[in-house]
Length: 169
Image 1: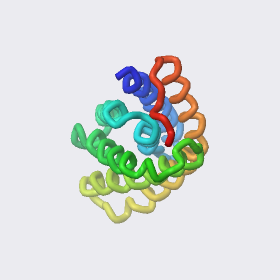
Image 2 (image 1 turned 60 degrees about the vertical axis):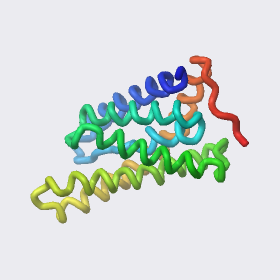
Image 3 (image 1 turned 120 degrees about the horizontal axis):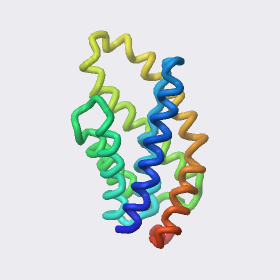
C-alpha cells in the first residue's frame, strides 16, 4: 500500500496546484479540470488494488471541494480506473505519449459526465454548454502540457517510497 499512499500525495499536490490555477484564472472565466491525471498513471502502472485505492482517495479529495454529491468524483474515478486497467495490457503503457493520450481520453469522459451531473442544477443549462466546452478545450491543452511532468513526478515519488510500478509486459 506504500504505492497508493505515495500516489495520493502527488494527487494532493495536483489538487492544490489545480485549485491555485483555477483561482488565478477565475478573472478570465476559465476553469481547469484535471480528472484524467487522477486516473491514468495509477491505472496503467500500479497493481489493481493499489491503483484503485489511490484513485478513490484522489476522488474523495476532489469531492471535498466540489459542489456535487460527496462520492461522485470517487465513483467516477474508480469506474474510469477499472476501464483503463482492463485495457492496459493492450497498450504500450511504458510510452509517455500513450499515458498522455489515456489521460486526455479519461479527462474528456470524466468532464462530460460531471458536466451532465451539474447541468441539471443550472437554471439555463443549455446556455452553459459553450462555456463548458471552452473549459474542456483549455483543460485538455493544459493537461497535455502538464501530464509528462506529472507522470515523471509520480514515478519518482514511487521510487522514493520504495514502491515500484507494475512490470511492463
